Image (cartoon, rainbow, N blue to C red; front, side):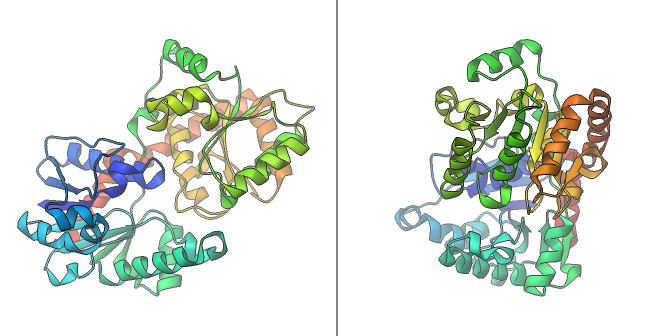
Length: 383
C-alpha cells in the first residue's frame, strides 16, 4: 500500500499529538517495510525529523499551495494524494481533508480525545466550534476511526452518535528510548546540566487546569514537614500556571517546586525541547505524579512505566487504562490522597519496587510492535 498521513504534528508538535505521530510512523516503517509511507508536511522547517527508507516527506508545491498551506493541508492536498496514487490516508490528529471521500481514497482518522466537548469552558469558544466541526466531519466521513482509549471511544459514541462498529481502540506506544536504561554516567550529566536535585517527584504536561498541578502543589504543602523532596515540573502554561505560582508564593513553596522548563539550560537545549533528555530525567526521578482530571490517554503514565518509575495517577477517565495494575490511584480532587501516595512511594521501598515491576509488565501492552499491528489491522480492514 501507499499510505498517506497528515504529518503536521509529526514534524512540528512537541507534545502528545507529535509524540503519537512520530512513534507510530517509526513503528509502521520498521515493522511493515513492505508499504510506502507518505508524510504530508504543510510547512518548513520542522522542529522534528521522521526518517526511514520507506518514508517520504511531501511538501506543498506551487505558489498557491505554499502560500495557503493550511488550505493545502485541509483540502487541496487531495490532488497530491491522487498524483502519488495513495491507497489510504490516515489523519493522525482528528482531521481528514474535506471532500476526500469523493476521491475513492480510503480514510482512517485518529481521535485522541473530545475534551473540548466535555469541558468547553476550558477553551476559547471559537476554538470549540472549529474543533467540533472538524472532528465531527472526520468521524462522519472517515471509513474507520481509531480511538486511543476506551474512554475516547465512549465519548465519540456519546457526543457524535457514531456507530460503535466504526471505531477501533488502538492504544498508543511511546518513544522506545523510555524502555532503555540510561547509563549512570549519562544520568549524572543530565543531572548536572539541568541542576536536578538528588531526589525529586516529577510532573510532566501542559500546565492547564485539567492536568491538576495545583492539587499536586497542595499535596507538597501538606508534606512540607514530612518529606524533604522537591517537585520538578516539565511543561508550560498561561493563566492557570500563574494561579499555581501564586499559590506557591503564598505558601512559601518556592524552593520546593522547580519549573524545569524555565531553566536557562533547558530553554537553550535542543535535546530538552525535543524530549531526547526525558528518559534520563524520568529515570532520575522518585515518582511520576500525574493526577489529571481527564485525558484522551495519558502518555506520560506509559513513559513512566517503561522507565521503571513509580506512577501516581487518577482513578478516573482513561488513566486506569494507561496504568493498569502498575500505578497508584488517587482521587484527583483530593490533595490529601495525592500526598498519601507520594509519602507511601517515598517511604516504602518494597511497595515502590513491587509497583515498578507490575508497571513494567503492564507496559508490554503498549509495545511499539503491538500498537503498530493494531493500526495496520485497521488499515487492512478498509483497504
